[in-house]
Amino acid sequence: MSRSIDYYFSLVSPWAYIGHRHFLDIARRHDASIVYKPVLLNEVFSETGGLPLARRHPARQAYRTVELQRWREKRGLAFHLWPKHWPYDADLANCAVLAVVAAGGDPADLVQKAFNGVWENQENLADAAALTRLLQETGFDPPSVLASANSPAIRAAYERNRLDAIAAGVFGAPCYVLNGEIFWGQDRLDLLADALASGRAPFAAKPQGGT
Image (cartoon, rainbow, N blue to C red):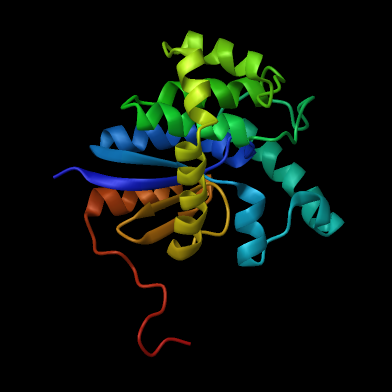
């Protein structure tokens, strides 16, 4: 029986970019379907006690830079630590992913190309022209996708993703949720793979009698 993984992410997240290809490989290897749930990241942070990067202590900001370099080497990637247009307003790009899903499409390649566009090619995905090109390259119809992305229905779905994330206990991106168990961060992907391989029951977030 195919299992389903809720994939909470934002196209503004470097960590989601770093883990995306590895995550797709894991899902395919274990015959798991992916429910793409892009979210407005800062809103999730504000609801769950997190801080946007600029408001974190300098020590945390410095360590993040080191970690990006470590994972860039580990995953064999080539990306800019501070892309030209980053941070950018990812709402339109995130909603374009939702629009593709709503139309019955598979957004995996679009998401990968979008991540590559931001982190490797320093493109501005807040620009509809940049999104148009990416949609064309991945076989989607840009006018219809972008019109849908700006529609009340897709914007409402985007808001539902935020509420779903908070209700599920998600507090950052990427988060992969399997049977209600959260795997936060692309550095937990091997643990997700282990859970899929074993078929074990999800671990409880609040064990009875725990401290």
